[in-house]
Length: 90
Image (spheres, rainbow, N blue to C red):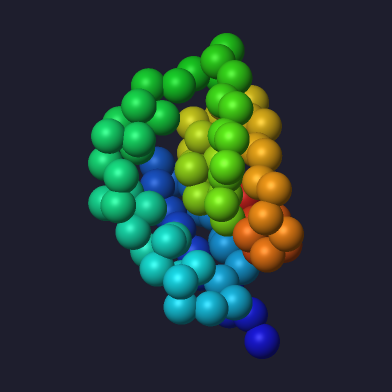
């Protein structure tokens, strides 16, 4: 059964479905795995648009969309990654 892993930043919460250790690790290292990507996404505004191509399980997609409020489009062709998605964003 899939677990739910919560990520909190800037007073907002994203709850990710984490059905395995790899997905949980992706969420837990969201801010540290690719710090330059996070720095870049933090510069986004609600007037920008983020196209996340090869989005994997969508951690940067959700960060941009929910934390930064940026309209976001994610593209992930691999069906197993595509099936692992966000549960809620608050």
